[in-house]
Image 1 (spheres, rainbow, N blue to C red):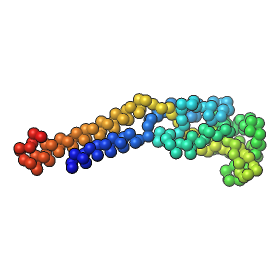
Image 2 (image 1 turned 90 degrees about the vertical axis):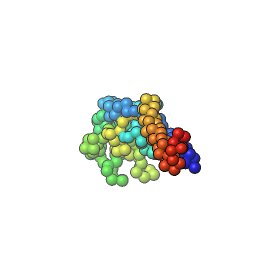
Image 3 (image 1 turned 60 degrees about the horizontal axis):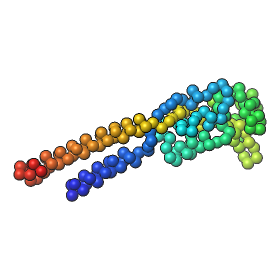
Length: 195
């Protein structure tokens, strides 16, 4: 019975290691470092093998698809280190000349919108709608200054598996030793200690 519980526990421990989101990622650099004084679309700032996120755990599954992954699929997110100076250019590219303020439907004049972006230390703006008929350019608050560019790391994945294995395997070896040297000795006495 002990052997069945032991094997099941060992397999569950290994499963929990392999059930962790892999591959692991390593930081390449901050998204801010990729931005220049020129205006670029957000997907132009990263390569097809990279992802953006604040933490590595944000790069997997549903979380990524609904947040940073969603942002990369949007056609009209423009970024620059001095985005406020490029609003006229964004307006020309999108054909939108209305600017969204802080409120849900608040519209701002161009000069006030530029000041708003500067006060927020914004790096990105995007084309959005405030109702069915009104398209506006707004501050892309979801592209924070703390986003990192990540790339899959074979080394980090291998290190994670090795680290977890080095914790699990010695633990189960200790359990085996305790079982054979102590538990069986206590129950069966000296006759069975060499089992």
